[in-house]
Structures are given as structure tokens and as C-alpha cells.
Length: 333
Image (cartoon, rainbow, N blue to C red; front, top):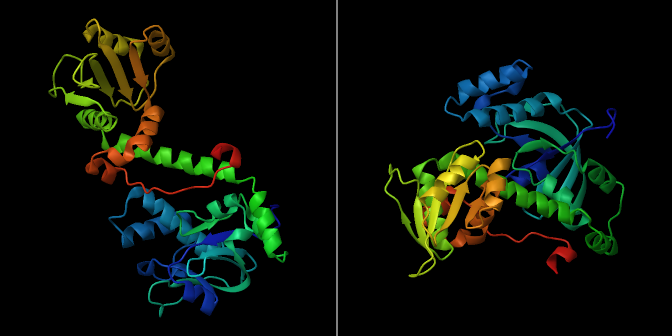
């Protein structure tokens, strides 16, 4: 979009009737009061947010204060709004007709703009990528990647045959599926890194190996053997000696060698890290096939594969919901 074109905003709500029947878009944060009385400055909004919500997490302060500032000061008359309604699963596109105002009589959504709804279109009228963009976890956000698709939608009369054709030719499906998968993997790795340090990661890896069908014994904490977990596939050898590292930096060759030094003839080794391995460490591993190394990305893949069999406490730590996502026909074959 060019700089002279209108911006497009996306918004979510739990009150479809308010938006559709009263012709407004609105957000909450009632305790913030009238946003028009706060200095029109992002830092001022952050300071006010912290005063109102002193126990808010640092990350949420920036996100929420930023949304409130954009809603009050960046949304302009003539801008477009895309709003997916849950009550009828439609995509509603409108134009902003008023500046920001505070409705003190509203039960919850006190921060408002007047909007004229121009189109109410079925979700099937849009590409998977466009739908994914307005599925943002944020309450209020700018629509950028698929802005042109939403603008074009206002100029078209979507008939059933066009909708079917759009579904068959949707080239955004593969990219959208990949983005969802990568976002999920990022979330898992962040949760592992945040919640599992030191001995806690050893216990988690032992449980993951159990979910994969191994019998595991976690070594006594504080031991100097260099072995964190001993695993067997069944009652018989080979024995698998596991070393787990939760450090942020890449694993060096000397660290891998310490695992090799603790192994006896017939043993296999497994090294698990949330980070990665240096070039020399990789070279050493290539020349030592009895030791397998797993980095953070590979660990996440295993978590996804064996998630349902993990201990309940780890599933609560990494809350995931099984869903089906569209992929290209080539990927499905």
C-alpha cells in the first residue's frame, strides 16, 4: 500500500452485537479511563498503564499500551476495519466514521470509534493467509500482508462459483501452514527454555524418553559422573548414557568428549541441548557415530511427536491443542 492510501485495522471482540448492531469498533481496559485525557505520547500511555495495572507483566505493558495508543491516536476517519465475527463466522469490512471517543456508560468496551459496515462476506471468500493474519492474538492490530486482498473484496461481488475457484487456487495455504507450525515450535522452545533449567530439564528429558518407549533412571543430582540419565530400550543392553545441558551457548567439542569418556564398551551416548553445537563439536559427532546429539529444534520435534504421552505436568507447562491445519495437496500425498 502506498503512503497516501488508507490504513486497514483488524480487531477482535467478544461482543458481536455491539459492533454489528451499534456500528462501532471498541476495546476494553475500562480502568484506563478516557484515553483522550492522556498525553498523546507512547511513553505517557505506558506510564499510565503501569499506574492502573501495577502488577502487569513487562511484555504486556508494551503490547497493551501500544494498542491503546494506536486505537486512540493512529486510527483516522476514512481508515478501513476488518472484523471477523464469531456469531456468524463472517468477515465484516467497514470504514471509520469518527475519531476516538470514550463511552463511560458501556459495560466493558468503553474505548470506541463509530464505523459504517460496508461488506459482510463469508470466510470462504478469502485466502488462508488473509484469514490467518486477522486471526492475530492481539485485540487490535494493523493489517499489512493481505491488506490489498481485503481492499479488493469491497469491490467484488462474490458468487458461489468464485468462492469455490478461490479455494482451489489458494496459494497461501502452504505458507500459512508453515507459519503456524513455526510459531508453535517457537512457543515450545521458549517455554522449555523459561521453565526448565538444570536438573528440571534432566527430569523432562527422562520423561520424554519414557514417552518414546525407553526405561530411564535419572542420576542423583550433584553427582560428578557426567551422566544425567541412563536409558534402556528393554531389559537388555545396549545401555544409553544421556547428558543434558540447558546452557544458552552452543555446546563445544570438549563437552561432548566428557560424555565419551564416561562410556564403556557397548554403550551408546545421547547428548541433549536446548541450544546448538559448535562446528568442531559437529565434526566430532560425525566421527563418533555411537553418540547422537539433539539440539533445541530437534527436541521440539520430539515433543510434538510424543506430546500426548508426556506427563501431565509437562503438558500443562506447554499447553497445546490438537488441531488440523490446511496444507497443499502435494504435502498431503
